[in-house]
Image 1 (cartoon, one colour):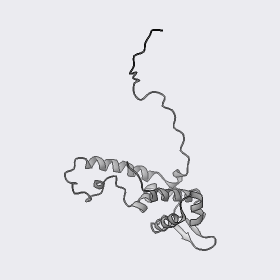
Image 2 (tube, one colour):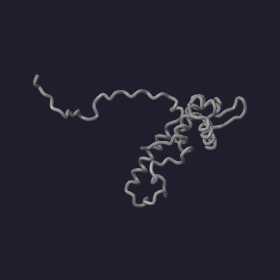
Image 3 (cartoon, rainbow, N blue to C red):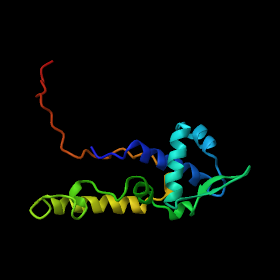
Image 4 (tube, helix red, strand yellow):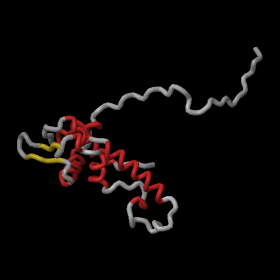
Length: 156
């Protein structure tokens, strides 16, 4: 299963919360209350996201944290990379990371999959993460022909 770690998931949640109110400073305590993420975890993530340049901070009574850029300018890929490093679906996605790199027949395909995921996450912005996802329309026709494993009896 391909999965982000919990801290990265929380980081996306925090930055999506900022994206809803991009001009307003929000404290760690307020973020914890709004998101349900424990305050020590929020503080840890805020420090990392601040260091990565995704947030700015302001001290004082009207202080707090805010996005460093407009939500439309922050791709989700930047959040993931700030918290986990470069996106790599497998070890061989990064040059020089796998001892079998030169002879692996699967590597080119994993690299292609990694590129597709990277492109999708680079196009998805924090602004888009704040919008509700429209419900999926029902499939008008079956994707596969219907198969009835049991013959139907015509007897009454």
